[in-house]
Length: 503
Picture 1 (spheres, rainbow, N blue to C red):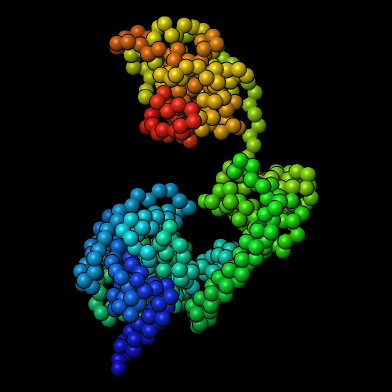
Picture 2: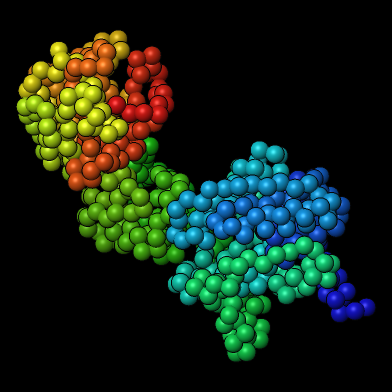
């Protein structure tokens, strides 16, 4: 038998053994193909081994990130591969949003798209073509970055992709050389990603130096893969201990309205450091499931518990930890309450209101002086100067435009989802005691719109110091409220409706 034939049989045996527990009988498998040799070989091997594994369905899918013009070539190559193998083919196009870098953002967008598509079409497994060489590179890159045990575990053979769908890596025990030789031997359609030649990318730079590293340690790939497996085993043990410790903390962990966790500092401080760090990470994620606290933040949280002193530290996102009376309180950051503010609006013009964080433009209606934005139009009868722009006061009541009547302003702000810590920052445009406009949220019943094309005033609020933009505080963070507002046909207690426009 030729060397190529022996290698193909070796690869087939490796993947058959690795794939059996990853794709149990009856699985519906979706192979993600990039157009490269690794995923081409994976697709062929899954097709050959599918009957042995008992697959119920097998199909190929390609994700086009549209980050370069040649991505069309990748998609065409993937489609051609499906034709050669006689397998169904699906093409997904994604928009790549911001991330830590282009590669990270593209990866996130790709996996999100694969998870959604698989779940929608009833696939319970998505296979990707990561090899042992990819695994070894990942371990070394993370080591250079200064990761911990979990990071050194690199890529797991199987992990949750989304609800009901698992991501599997049947090639993780086979070297890239062996996998690509298989694709080349069969003459499968493949193409090369031009970005693989860009040495500005860390992985590509590492690949360029790989030969020199192997001259120092010929078994480098195998040793790094063993290290990853060992670290995953250690992480499973440590995470299990952390979850058990978290359960033991149960009687002293209390949720306050689902927003705050409270625990005895000494009980967290008494845990071994590796377990305490993981417990702290679990606590953060209990409040914010998507949070990614850094190692430094986690260590500082445990350090706060061990110090026995009071204090506050900021964690991932909007969370903070506070040490008080031998306890740790974990919850939203508490911003200092702003001082009350009041500004007198004497007539048309540009009125700066620093404490409210905004500029109010007042112009004759129809003058064309105001661009679109957070605007309010008032009839002449409604716009009697002076007007007042102020913060809320005890006893304030508000009559929403089109609403059933007057109600407490506090109740209105609660119903539209303004957090308690933000309510004193909301700006109110008033005429006497009447609230004409809860800026950024809702016009009042007294804010009558002009009839016809002429007469009246147009008012526009924009963030102070950011001309032409209304995405920051007009009293409250508008971006967070843009899809939530009170509607006349959505009275208190019936939830919130969505709107495209604010004001």
